[in-house]
Amino acid sequence: MSALNFRIRKKTGTSPGSLIFTGEQKVDEVIITVYEYNDAEYKETKVVDVEELLNYQNNNHIIWINICGLHDVVKLGRIGEIFNIHSLVLEDILNVASTPKIEDFENYLFLIVKRLLMADMEVEIKHEQIGFILKQNILLTFQEIEGDDFNPIRERLRENKGRLRKQGSDYLIYRLLDSMVDNYFSIIDYFDEKIEDMEDEIIEKPNQASLESIHHLRKELIKFKRATVPVRDILFMIEREHFPIFKKSTFPYLRDINDHIKQILDSIENYREITNGLMDVYLSTASHKMNEVMKLLTIISTIFIPLTFIVGIYGMNFNPHSGGLNMPELNWEYGYPFVLLLMGAIAGFLFIWFKRKNWM
Image (cartoon, rainbow, N blue to C red; front, side, top):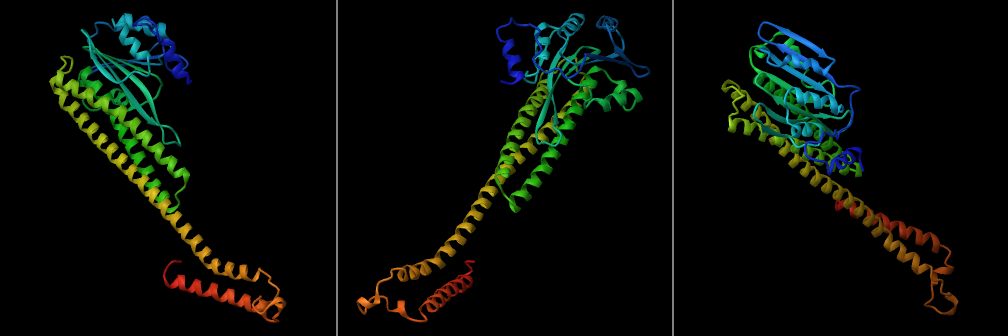
């Protein structure tokens, strides 16, 4: 049983809202960074003591609080108390196997989305769960690891590029979601390269490893789709429900992300069809190579059948002195060379005949 499954099973039977971290500790300590800004001002602070977050309540600036590391349950529980986050929400944040979703609470909006990345040197999609708590002017993000798709957003905040610092927290969450979806396109490009390489390999030199690679690729595409479809559903729900926390001016941007998700899902479906085609190509190529081998073996067998027949006759050794019908060539001086020449002539004739028929 994997460590993750063990931790999830350990959670079984506990009361609802129990704070149990089900993931793997990926950072030494919880890192809390606060980005406080408006059009004219910007301040970035590393928070050491969780109690410092009390200072960011009832603040007129836009506040982005990024929590990196989910293993310290006590610290995250205190963050939940400070910002009045429901215990069931914290439970979902700590359960890294939670399904991507969106839930509307009285004072905030809660989202879970999967960040996707490719493992180095492998065709394997890794997940990082990211939780979002969106309040009127505060956005809390909960991550498992440090360093992510959000770094360009941080740089734009520091340098005051574009309209980011002029907009509210709803626009900030749009930019964060957009950066995650943009990374999905890099995964699409990765799959595209791998499929091209696999096509060349299957046509030139198909083997058992090729078949295993196709199966693995199909499995990863399914994993990719399962992580992407809920994002589309989340965006659809935001557009349908018209949550008050999202300004009307932000909805066109959210629809743009939705269009990107549709493109990605279309690409995933295309690649799944291509992998199915690769499977057919592999089976067809393997069958063709097997037929070539069988044809060669059949030709060799056909050439040797008459030779075996001749050898079988001359291997009977009936005594020629006991009657005129018994192997008269046994005592013939040129009998052995004659039989060899006869066998060679038959083999040569069959070889030339097969060549003219284009069977070889």
